[in-house]
Length: 251
Image (cartoon, rainbow, N blue to C red):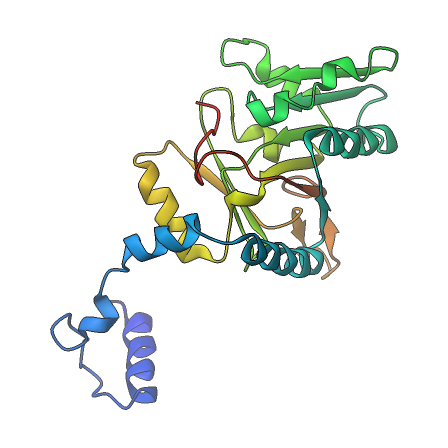
């Protein structure tokens, strides 16, 4: 054990009233090492009432505001499409004079039918098809990326984006503006519930946890957005889907 680590742990032991070298064991503290009851957690997640889901949305709204996330409740897919179209029309690209938008290959995103909404406007819509050999260039050219996260966490205003075929993580990280479409039934209370659902998924390639726009204050303690990712994040809450949480993720 490194010296700094030793002193750090010794201070914790002292604060807890334990002997300096008294390591905690599973036998002494069974409740500390006990695995969570995933059956109870899954039952709670999958059997929430409409009122409980509304409470989670309100908690998400409060926490999203603190993190600079723009939250947009939508009553329908048509309502969500109108919100997305307004964002695209009202924003200007930072590094180009042309508007390119890139979409995840996901049924919730496809339902927006954005390719039909800009027939007379200078907006080019791309989809992240796995077979597209120009996907990297299209992603770099796009100033808006649209995804459909698998899970949202109300407690931390986090969306969890899983990397799947046709749904690369670059869509939520490279464009200047990220728009996420989240079903109400994909919203959970906290990370314990989120990780329980992720374990149910089995082996995953990778995932991205997103809690607001990219920000840093490294230079002269001045807050700057967009340094390492999107400078603007919009979260659109769609009505619940027919299936259980984590279903219909576009495989």
